[in-house]
Amino acid sequence: STSEYGKVLIVCDRGSMDAEAYLTEAGKAEFHDKIRKSATQMMAEYDAVFHLVTAAKGAEEFYTTDNNEARKEDPALAAELDDKTIAAWTGHPHLRVIDNSTDFERKMQRLIREIASFLGEPEPFEIERKFIIDYPDLCMLEDMRNCQKVEILQTYLKCGKNDEEVRVRQRGDGDTFIFTKTTKKTLSGLKRIEVEKRLNMDAYCKELMNADTSLHQIRKTRYCLTYGHTYFEIDIYPFWKDKAILEVELTDENEAFEFPDFLKVKSEVTNLECYKNVNLAKNHGK
Picture 1 (cartoon, rainbow, N blue to C red):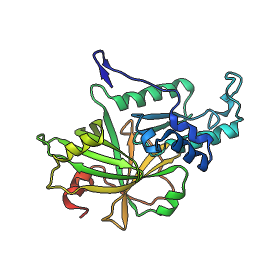
Picture 2: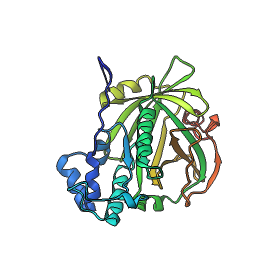
Picture 3: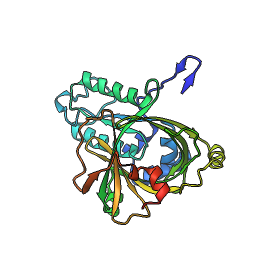
Picture 4: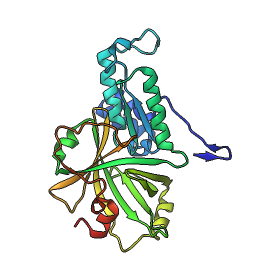
């Protein structure tokens, strides 16, 4: 957020969805029922989520309970709860998992870099790569603990600037939804400025009055997947029965990552205009 003093950043050590890691499926339902908020609504209270992987996964020699009276878990249980915590937040539109591939000091530097990338100076930016994959096994994805299904409807708005793309999006679990307005502008290569604003339902409906009626609405089912320490998004479109789009957002254009071994990647389409959502809206998947 912003104030008279400039940007204001609030970092929470824990988030409300962490509770799910310690609950059964029945307990999760009771939890959300009691606080009268769905997982979608609770995630919407956080602009971004940065998960620091426990030392019990990849840095076991540094895992200890001696420096924290509240920490009782042995390494195996700590690793299990860490997986469950990541799974609880999977589905958030901006989740980053920071592993133990470096020492602790550099781990903190990576965290700061991820936060800076999200906030952006002077503007927030994203670096995204996009791939065509064979149509995935949806039943398998839906059975995975580290995968979350999200329904998305996005509408493009009229915009007076040729180098900008403006859209509003309805995103949710089928029962509850959040609404956002996003403005994107390409800088160079894979890097784009992205400014996102949260909307209430009234503001969302008002924005729809400025819809670009020359473009179709885009409806898609997104499967948010945490694999290893990378966050992937698989978009399923109703007009394709043989393929889907796999997206990964990076901090650096040359950042290395590993594809999920159960997905068949056909080709990279990051720079192909025909696979951008705005062009799919223009051609309706042709």
